[in-house]
Image 1 (cartoon, one colour):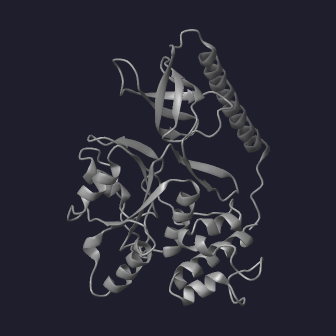
Image 2 (cartoon, helix red, strand yellow):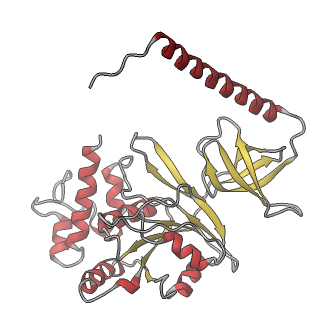
Amino acid sequence: MSKRKLTRRQAWRVEKIQQERTQRALKKESNYTTQLDASELGTEQHGLIISHFGKQVDVEMLEGENAGTIYRCHLRTHLGQLVTGDKVIWREGSPTGVVVAVLPRTSELQRPTNHGELKPVAANIDKIIITFAIEPQPFSNLIDRYLVAAELSDIEPVLLLNKADLINDSNRDTINQLIDRYQSIGYQVLTASTTLESGMQALYEQLNNNTCVFVGQSGVGKSSLINVLLPGVDIKVGGLSEQTRKGKHTTTTARLFHIPSGGDLIDSPGIREFALWHLHEDLIIEGFVEFKPFIGMCKFRNCKHEQEPKCALLDAVEAGKISESRLESYRRIIVSLSENK
């Protein structure tokens, strides 16, 4: 269907509205720049980013008698992409403060966007709590992608099966096989149920004096878990789509919460895919921890680990040292790299 042609007056009105919007934006930017350069800004002090909103962030004051107070802040240019968990230097302003510097990160979790840009998810993390559930259906390949990212970021991963109250005779064997797959290669797997409020003590122990980030697909119950762990926080909780049984996004920005007994918890927006397009396949294989003893042991240097003779990984599968499902998951990730180049 062809577009309707605007009259001269309609075209003039559209152009006028666009000009007014541009002028408002320029005025706002001018006021912002004036504030950044204003001498009435407070002294520099340390802070912690607890949430991010486009060009602004919420910064928690870490020093003085007002420690714990949260301030909305603008960002100085050329600071790069700041995220929840970043430790910064900032100056208090009226009404908005200014972040002037970011301190070096001890760790960061990153993922590429659909536009090919590398986007940090959270910073200064000790543990990644990879959350999956009975519903929506857990996908081992997504879990493996998170594990690769954690291993290559040198962040300890912990797997958490939520909604354990939904385990029944029809899904018990499948879930047990999934858990056994990861426990057999050394990963810790916790189980929890917010409905029954079970498994919370083990989760508290993981959070104790650590900064942890909850990751996982939408609908696995990350927000519900936080509501149980931190009564009174009351994060919005979304259900599953009746048609797809997949989660609906309720968390739109990563946010940091303090655990009263010690430690911090970052709730990240749920995603259905966690791409690794930015990584070379030589790094991907390093992220599969049980593959490491066999890397470089194949007969052919360019072995694809599919059907080549004297492939160390295929021989390891045959010997029961590597699971066929994990090798297949690795292959799927490698295929996804070439598809997105």
